[in-house]
Length: 128
Image 1: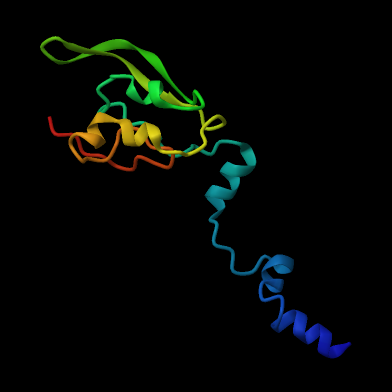
Image 2: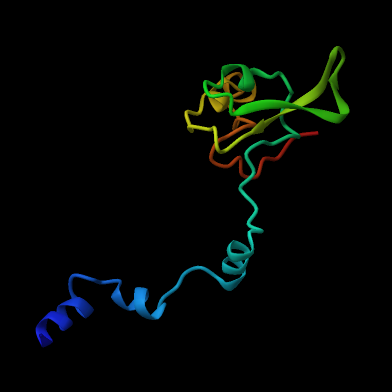
């Protein structure tokens, strides 16, 4: 019996101490509290500033996870082109196929990070 307990503590179950005693936790208290209270902010999926509002991502999405939402204040991008909508991604419908990202003209024409990404758009610097 002693050997079985020793194997459990040191051998087959290497995370036994962590499971029972919550040792070596890597999640900080701030994140734990946010999870428990339901206030966790999801990663940013759309960079609304860099988006040109063409709607290509919504048109190509096979599940309808991307919809275009109207802007309260339309943005004039250049003469003859006013951005009136930006994409919104529904994570419950998204199958992470990346069609929206790959079809985005910012990515496909200019080889910059797409303005919509099922994972996370990260930090994008927009030249002004």
